[in-house]
Image (cartoon, rainbow, N blue to C red; front, side, top):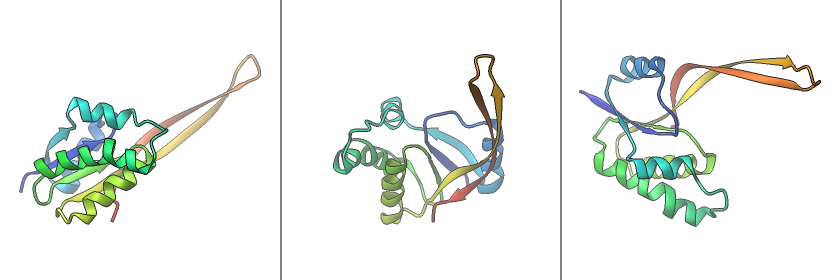
Length: 134
C-alpha cells in the first residue's frame, strides 16, 4: 500500500524526516496543506477562544484531510498546542483509520557569552523518530 503523509505544521520536512517516514510507515507521497490552510495553521490568532479556534483553524484543516486522506494514511500534526489537541481529537474521534503522529527530537544547546555581558543560547534540533499521539 502506498501511504501519504499529510503535513500539518509550519515548516519543511528535513531529508532525515522524509527517509524516516518512508522507512517507518511506507510513505510514498508527502501532502502539504493548500496555501490558505498552511497560512491559517502558521498564523493562529492567540486571541481566539476555543470556539473560534475550532471554526477558523481545526475544522477547515480536518475537512481537507477527511476529503483527501485514505485508509492507513499518516497525518503529521505539530504547532500550537491547543490547535494540535483539537485537530488530533477530531481526527481520532471520526475514526478515519489513519495514524496521527508528531516528530520527536534531540536538542543540543550551547550558551555563548557575548562581549556585552549577555548570553546567547543556540539550540540545534535533530530528528529522532515519529511518535503516534494515540
